[in-house]
Length: 363
Image (cartoon, rainbow, N blue to C red; front, side, top):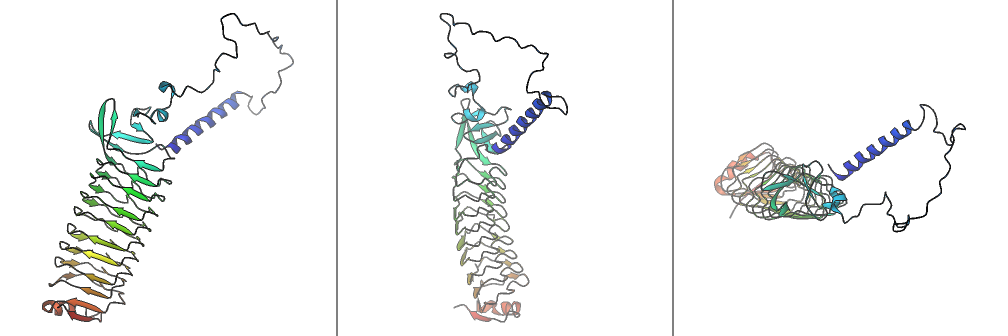
């Protein structure tokens, strides 16, 4: 459990103890006596004997309730010892080190399921941790591990981290920088959703999959670099990324999923590589700043309302017939020109006769 949960539990225990003390110290419904009853004889005060030779005086004796020596590991809490060494928690379920829990998956790897130091501002995930002489690779960040961790400003991931779990950093509204390791393969759904002030993301080569809404509502995100190894993008991945200006889709991506750039109102430039075959429905919904787009020759399908209410002024189709969903240009009031080859122009004129735009032949 997180540190604040532990504090709540400790506070509840103290409150219960105080209530028990009060109940035991007075009669039910009565007050605790402030003076002894008159029929009780007080013992006479005994004189203090002189100190014997060789014995310490009271001034020399240590206080019985003084704080334990911080240098004695056996008297420290797990959290205190974990500041400088890897320890197991009191229940033996997790390893603990410098504010982070590590769950042992097998004899070789661990994942991070949670944290206990709520005052941490920078998270540095190591490549490995060592316990009882054995090295364990840190391979994943668990689901919800750092979600809504206010105050976390920077994350540095080790090179052995392969998976970021669902909601791993969701709602980290103070996060400004993420440094990814070289081993990352998968970012799961909502992993960075609502990281309000995160402005740049540079994803590493080797990354293959990004889950739905992974960067949804990252309202300050202006720039993101997608690696050449990326093949799967999640639905609504950039939903409400209203500051995103431009993006290049690598050729390894075969489909733009549902609602990918919905409400990306500042998106001006999108580069679509050869290899893309599908644009699902509502991908560019309300992309008001997108004025021009060239569709690759590899494209075979465009879903319904793909460009709904976008700012498109012109668009270039490939030199072949692409399957078209309904109403792909609904409310595209600025659209004036559709570019096609001579061979397929009639096909597109029939498909978009409701749009009322000019058709131009590619030279």
